[in-house]
Amino acid sequence: MSVFSKEYCEKMRVRIDCGNMLAEAVGKHGITAEEISEMLPRAEGAFAGVEKKHGEMRWRLLPETQLEILPAVEEAAEFVRSKADNFVILGIGGSALGPIAVHRALNHLYHNDLPSEKRKSPRLFVEDNVDPERMAALLDVIDTDRTVFNVITKSGSTSETMAQLLIITRMLIDRYGEEGLRDHLIATTDKQKGNLIGIAKKYNLRTFIIPDGVGGRFSELCPVGLVAAAVGGADVRALLAGAGYMDELCSNADVKRNPGLMLALLEIIAAEKHGANIGVLMPYADSLKFMADWYAQLWAESLGKKLVKDGKVLRFGQTPVKSLGVTDQHSQVQLYTEGPFDKVITFIGVDKYRSEVTIPHSFDDIADVAFLSGHSFNELIKSEQMATEYAVTRSGHMNKTITLPVVNPFTIGELLYFFEIQTAYAGELLNINAFDQPGVEEGKNATYAMLGKHGYDEKRRELDSAKPKKAEYIF
Ligand code: PA5
Image (tube, rainbow, N blue to C red; front, top):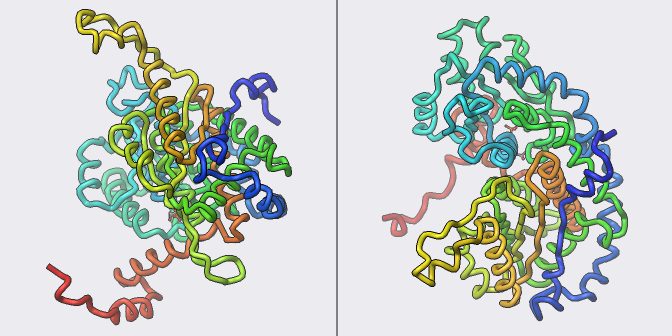
């Protein structure tokens, strides 16, 4: 049961405006009322499908179930905050992008660069690559005496994460002994699958379990994201409450009263009937910049699928593109207004930014510059967002706007959950499995084979027998 009042929830409600998806707003490249009517039976089926799988889609239960683990999350966060200047996540994909997005949304935009007396929590580093230069660089900037690592892997076997873990544990054991490992390493993984859980038990590590039925990209609201958010000082109860509130808002069988279902429906109509196979997410807030990265994974990995559930070939996929307002007005918006009608643009706006910056009078004698004086950055960014929405709409391109009253843990919880449920509805509308990732697994298996993992000999032979590329095309 949420401790947030009805009034608070209403005040913090994320607003969604999809009027500019319609033909009446953008003209012939927009969606018609008939197209929506035709899709209603599919929308009903999608709603029923998601409801039926409530138990299987355990990420839907996280706003409630994770309340139980908050004391442990807070204990771990307190331990990290008291012990460390650096908190380093070792993880990739769904084990990395959520923590990055939430950290960016809720902390100082130059968090790691703040002097320690101004920084209220450890610096955060999320190591989601195996570029050797990056690992070397990390080790140059952290003092391991004052660092806690959190290794996150649902499968407990992802090569990149396990390779990082091997490096870090070797270093930690050499420096602090096996008994010192617990002071520097937290493990977040499945309760039995993979190798990490065994390692965690062997070294008595603080361990967080990723619940069953919660896949990587749907895992931000379980320990994967909650521990990092709590270390950063975020109110994790509010994060969960915001998600729970959005679950309520998206629980209506009537598509006109269910924003998650409505937006999923519009995206699918846009793709299927209007060839809009690109989805641009353009937040007008630096704090939400990495929300677009998180969303790109969620949408691409969940819906980019070859087969429908009965095995027929579909080859669906809307390519997500990350964009940032206003920065990308000066790079991509030309394409969004005058380019082909192959995309839907989703703007994310914020009513009230957490800082107010007024533009002073410095050059009142230069009329072309002086008009800005007396206004604020707050007005400028809002005006530019509205101007871009206007230009995109006028050019006939489908678009929609999501508005956060303010960026805080509650609204971020809403936003995360909104995108998750929209993705689940889209998967049901398409009759695909939005929760698997055979394409990603294929790459993981090929990596195992190339590096000689036991049991992957067959795959290795397959790779070795691949046809050589034509020499004349190699320069
Ligand atoms: O969404 C997913 O399932 C993937 O992106 C995974 O998060 C990613 O492959 C990392 O997997 P794991 O957490 O098992 O290491």
